[in-house]
Length: 315
Image (cartoon, rainbow, N blue to C red; front, top):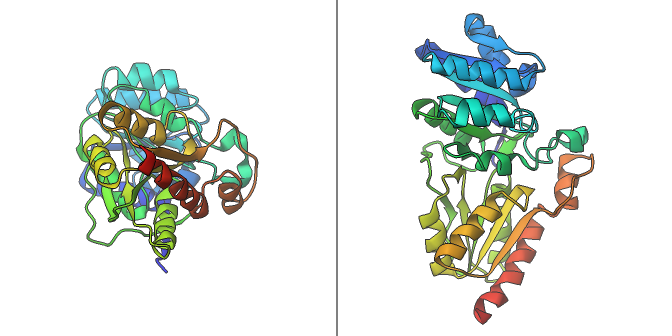
């Protein structure tokens, strides 16, 4: 089995690595640095680390000011708090002036587990995706998270990168190269395409392996750049496989499924199924139990694939 590695720990270590070569890199947090792992940077570079306390709105304003002064600015908190608590600050101080602020959130989705609905970020991608000019990335594993952070650091403009709380299996080889705005074909296939983000990419791959034994060939796309989304890859998948299933640890409205449906509706409509959280807030529980309870497992993806293929033939 592939080893499991923490995205957020890898993020903290990457900040330290980048900080050694870039004296203009500054890092902000909102009283959660031991959970977001930005404390690793703070320990190494205390003069360039700013803990803003339980005040995400102020953190974003400070981040914007530092970026406007020429600093490469990373700001972190839990996904439920950014953009949740500070949407107006992100809109006015970061997105509108297109400042070089990189928001890296952790604890995305329902897999924060026992912390419950108050800490489960299931609307965050819809909010972030609504902001013009904000690049949104949801890595599938720690290797991709590291490369996404480095790409954000070297690319001008505002970014939001969403990481999860649990350790996740490494899905990519060591020589993997993240390409901003491009889907990654994790598995070829001809009967249906599964498009997934975040930890749902692993579930999609498991579903594809299970369905292979039944003679169903599933293409799996890791759509880690949610915005700007890879329209060409979606259109090609629709033309070549004739059906699409999306999988995300987020509400069905406003996330990956909505973005893919827009592309299909505009360019090449095909039958589609969405694996996402229905219009509800979720219970407290262990991560694996919550994924099963809210239909976010490989088995749920398999059922969606089996449901969409017959519709393809009637289209």
